[in-house]
Image (cartoon, rainbow, N blue to C red):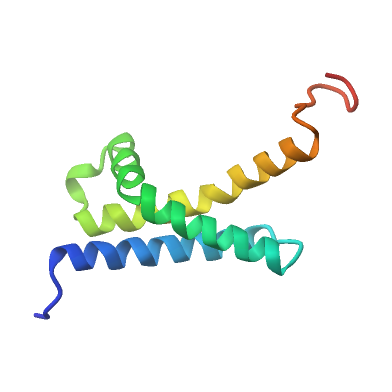
Length: 111
């Protein structure tokens, strides 16, 4: 059909999933500035590439659909999920560092 190998299709699926997950994360909660948007997008894409295959396999196994998906579909799903979740981790770490390492529980001002 075309000259792309299966490995090339998997890389394209990873890239598409990572970019889609990052774009959705930026639209879900708007960043406060260009710098934050760029950092969140870059981290989302990187996490999508790095964790895409593993996340896709885990999600498919948990849902019981691993046997019904092609490898490209699993990688696309995992890359988008990993990329989408990356901004949550960034927000948590940012808030933790902004609070000086304290995690507040219960009522405001109590530890």
